[in-house]
Length: 133
Image (tube, rainbow, N blue to C red; front, top):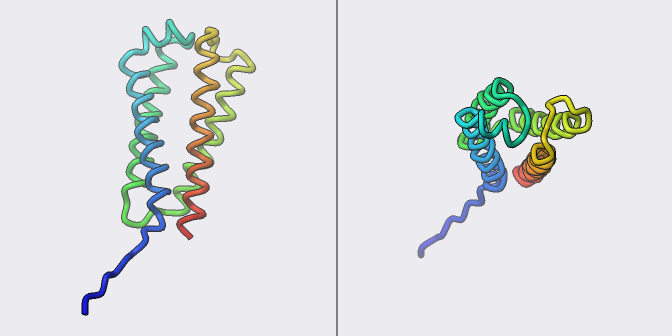
């Protein structure tokens, strides 16, 4: 008699949410870092600010990707990622509302759009944590 053992990886959804976040965030950071001049002309913030944001996003993306590829995903680290994603979302909206980064119209639309994407990643990660229980 042959037995088939089926194991459910309860963290699969969470892993996908973390890795997708890492890829999008890292890609965004790379663009800000390598094309700060043209991106700044389009969006508004100066090249120094965009390069700084680019470095942060690259480092953050690598850290989130590392977290999502571990055999055991830390709940605490995942909660920190969720918190930082929420902070980023609120900060982006505040930056547009206050005019802090002097966005162009396209830049303001981009900032709100990417804030919505980051908020969606936070929500997916919350769902993933719940599924992983």
